Length: 88
Image 1: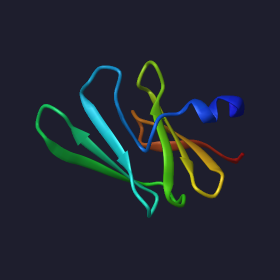
Image 2: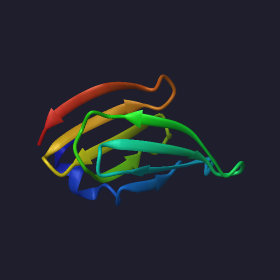
Image 3: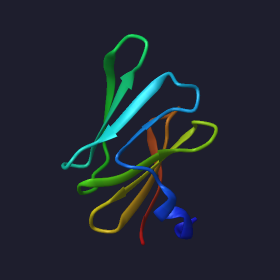
Image 4: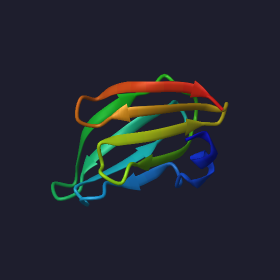
């Protein structure tokens, strides 16, 4: 898992089913947008620092975040809960 952190995309991603767009900011927040409605539907306050990398899992159930300070977090997109936090 940790070896793949460098494979994460930029601080934004589109869900595999192309329904949501997520972007990370300098305060560790993740904005979730409904693409078809063109509106923000959620903000995840991750508690991390500046988000540098962000990527959905292939099934869209999980969202991986990495910040500038070397913290890594995985969120369940269905429950909106953090399931893992580590330092890499």
